[in-house]
Length: 525
Image 1 (cartoon, helix red, strand yellow):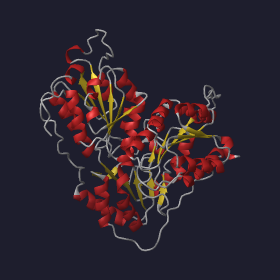
Image 2 (cartoon, one colour; image 1 turned 60 degrees about the vertical axis):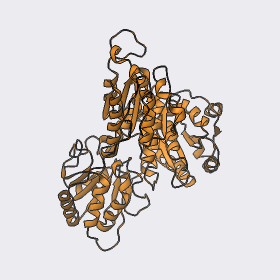
Image 3 (cartoon, one colour; image 1 turned 30 degrees about the horizontal axis):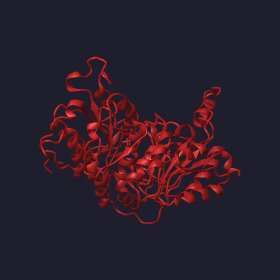
Image 4 (tube, helix red, strand yellow; image 1 turned 180 degrees about the horizontal axis):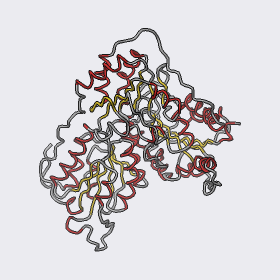
């Protein structure tokens, strides 16, 4: 695809992104990036106008997690970049491929303290703190190379965001030639010797276990084959939910926060862990360290042996590694079922379990659910069954509020034929509530499941547990029903669990978004 020499760099980048398979860009045009928008009307790329750069970043993240393809954003100098840093931090922490392309001040007049509009001391440096690649272009060739680097990274390394900034004067320069998509590398294959060692260790094990993270979402078939041959239980991280069907008799799901699971790890003589950082936010305890019997598969050499001791460290793609291991495992006779006692539930968990049971029964099995940092989602991480990969999307590592709504919008743009629901709390919704307008504008039939307890419930409960008198944890909420309708959404506030099921069924057949407001009172209706 040879570009005409008179195309500007700002125009040529649109054709280049399209050549790499980009079909959607989330962003907001501004005085400093309009040159990036000049060629959009004649391209095949759809642009989604967010209400805030934070929303655009979360949309790109939701798109990436739901589809497995990179999510792309356009933003502007200064505040555009600082507004999108939170979504970039979430994408970096949760291993999500997001590309942010931003304008920057002129090559010869940036960071000089001359009072330029949107001036920052080090815009690229700010982006570098939450990205795997942070690049600044000085020539058209730098732009071409920067985009190529980003997509090569996405294709072959641990998923993490990339950033490219293009100075204002460069955006208007003639692009020249060479704006073709380049061949991309594949995921690295594991070493055969490491695979053989893992097979021998697993075949000899008396109490093997399997642990799947987000890096193994597409490797569930091989993981199940290993589990069924070994009669080994499967545990997942939150990011790994859906790698294997939740109803499989060997799947325990996400239960890593329980003492009983830590004891199972300690008693296992072979723990096969694939695609997980095994971080504090997986265990919700920074003191859990697996010190022996760990076979670890990961694409990231920086984490493969920390903080846990990997006796067999396999660097490479989890899918290829698990498939190779599966071929060498000797099947054991008999049937097996994983057993785990969740222990007694408190009143809150019992109530939330009733609500989540109704939601699960009412939603189609393939529904993509984007959840937020809220009590109902914390419970759902453990007890809400998911049977397909990329259908449970939660902001685990960075843990930011307001993620779920824009992420759900991005997921729906990425998978328009799949039902999408958002699970969010009353406080978190108000971080990005303006994106209800984006959902309404595009008539996206997403379901916003709002848990309204008129409080920062988790923080209030934490204060009580720590002997702190609850303060600054109650708020005056808006009338969410009126607010949703003001944005053009259907709105419902069911007064019973039966009414909740009916409201979800009605929302599934709607031609636009619906907000369903759930309250603790509903459970007793």
